[in-house]
Image (cartoon, rainbow, N blue to C red; front, side, top):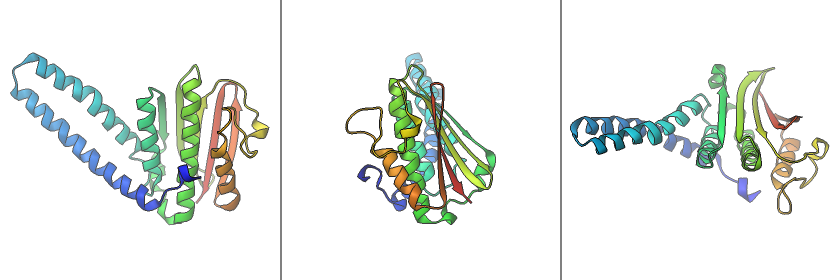
Length: 215
């Protein structure tokens, strides 16, 4: 619980930092390209080209992918986890429907908003851990509006066996002693928040966690 305990103030402050970082990142790119045109040394030009095409472009790509997520804390959680995936060389696909940006996360209330952030944090941490051991290191995140709900689906490949009937049992895990607390926290949150619904699916070697937020 302590691992996922945070505050909306911190998450929203992080989102402001992200927005500023996005602006700075774009400005840095322009400055580097200006410097590139001023130097004659081929090695320096190649270095700047590589920097712009890799590090800065990667950052811009993550910023762009998460920009459709409404402010309120969720964007900060997903952004930070995507950065972790990038560092661990885990591929990801973030698919966000255009109408998601019209969903007002702040309007649903701070308590539910924070619960969403905790649950998504647990789901993504579990997906990252499972992907590190799986043969196919890929995490899919889908966010869309349907049936008057904001839907967040997170799927990943996994290795080994998972008993879907025991997923919601206290401390159930396939990772050994000291694990299983994340999903226990999720179960507790879902039981006490009527605005949230949770479903789990397994299709062959793909594990899917679905979170539905009532509008």
